[in-house]
Length: 124
Image (cartoon, rainbow, N blue to C red; front, side):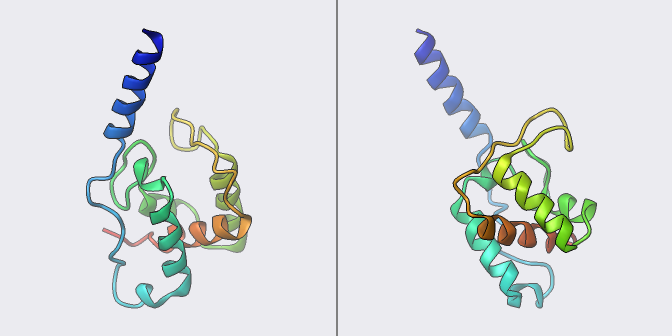
C-alpha cells in the first residue's frame, strides 16, 4: 500500500511539474538565436529534465529562467556558481523547494546550461 501511494504521488508530482509549452525554443530578438552558447545550452536543457520544474518566463516548481538571468549578472563567476548549483543541487535561494542535483552532467555541460539561462534575462 505504501509503495502504491508513493508511485501515485510521484506520478502526480511529475504530471503537475510538466512543461505546458513554454520550452524556450524562441529567443528574444534575433541575435540570441545565433549565439552558440544559446544553442548548446538550449539543446542540453531540452534533453534534460529541467523543463519539468523550470519554465522560461513563468515561475513553476523552480524559478523562471528569465528571473535567474535578471538576478545574476552574466559573469564567469556567476556562470560557474550556477553550473555548480546545476550539478550539485541547492536550496534556499528561491524558496523552500530544493533543486535536485544533476551529478551525471559534466562541468562543461553544466556551464553551457548556465550560459543559456543567463542569456534569457530579457525574455518576456
